[in-house]
Length: 340
Picture 1 (cartoon, rainbow, N blue to C red):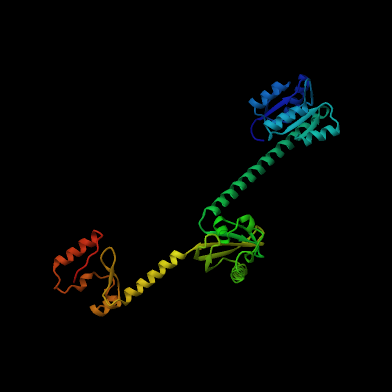
Picture 2 (cartoon, rainbow, N blue to C red):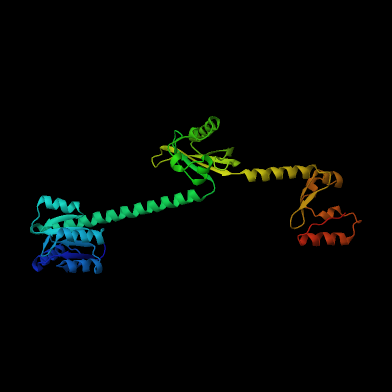
């Protein structure tokens, strides 16, 4: 353990305390030691000294080792506790280990003390490392679940056989069931067979391709009856060994986007087929689009018009004030209507 080790020694015999300290020094350990010889001084040391290691005799006047161990486990559960006792039967030694002691060493065999200390400190550090890893994993899982539960898309996970392993609240609304009631079941338990067959076919395509696949489909929610068009992406999921563990699905509502694109297509078609000459300019005033009527009426091809200024239409018959009014209106964000 790096740095100076703080050792709390529970020992009422001064001579035995010196022998224990000497055994530690002889092994080259760097430490500061605080000795306690009663229940009161032991509790105070736990609170004030914050030991990295506790060594304790088992038999003390009006205070025994099991009580000391119980106090240490309650207030400093991560600190290794080793009994250093004059005599300890096998049954009692096993009981101390069951109640939380890291090890025990007989006072007549202090040569075994430092190896026991090193093992106990190593094991304690491993436990701390595991707890940190477990806590980090727990936090990552919580963050993942929060993310999945928060996003507006439908998210779910199935095993290779199509059995649900999990889903988010948005997906719960689609099936009209809680996640706990969805897990362990398949699409055939919630939607008509034809739709379930379609879902299953898309799962198989993603697994066969070994990469994500996408499709668009109309979905009707069991909760509320909403019907919309969704873009669904399915991705094969593999574990660290590369084994297929399931298919991750994400479905995004694109109903509004599809409607907007359709309106834009209709508008584009109406503009192109309009009998009126229509042109669109960039912010700098150069032409970036003209319709077929413009080409027919002006005599300019699209290639000749693009990048030019609308002044190419100047005939000399439009008053200068008309152009001034037109550009002032556009600069101020107002529409303009007139004749050229």
